Length: 227
Length: 80
Image (cartoon, rainbow over all chains, first blue to last red; front, side):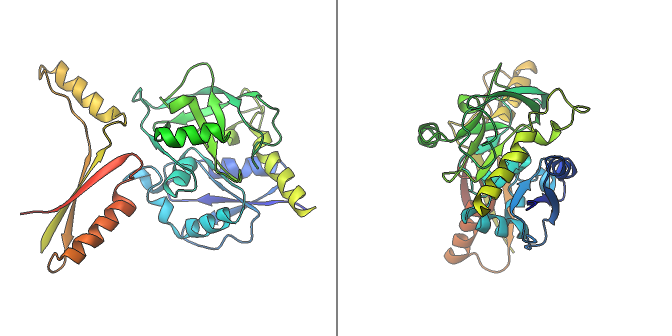
């Protein structure tokens, strides 16, 4: 079985073709999904890519959240379908309440673009099961509004339930509470993070191949679910 | 046509980097002793009369789309 992984294109998405390429390099079949259609073409998983959906007007992800495709993504995610939100996709997942909290402007007020070191805090998600416990990885980070915020109760719950999936190492680039770079939902099928694994899948284009396990993890999960 | 104003502000406990930048610029310009927090103002033109029911709809719209109540508060009022 070749997994079919949908990649949504919103008006203003930037990294949809990189995400599709990463899916292909990891051995799955990428399927293009369009924001204005609620048809998910029977995909097994969905990636919400980085970029500036709907121009980031109002708030990042606030308008994309109400697009036709998101109605279907939310329904399928709640039924257990794997969903990965990268950067703007993470913002969309928070606005859609598939993940708690919100992303606000970086505390340093500038756009940050660099190779970012992270620690994988949990393998217990659909998108991280191919990593080692506590593995340190380096993937691209590029955002202006990546500062993760939530109330104290939400943060305590995320930490207590082991739902902080990635933490920034060697300096917090944006002011995120507890150096949080990515989180998951209670079931572990929805993951959002600010850094960009899809940019680290080819030795020609980056300092590591640390992005690949994201895209192989989901395939391992899907295969196990079938078998 | 009536106008309803929706003001959206970052919650007091949430960092406001834009307001901080504006505060810094004011200080550099010599406008001392001023602290700024920056929000958004929406002017909503309403067909017909602004009834309590209509205001309720606008509050619902503000809560659903105009503000993210995880990080922002909002206030709805009729102008005039």
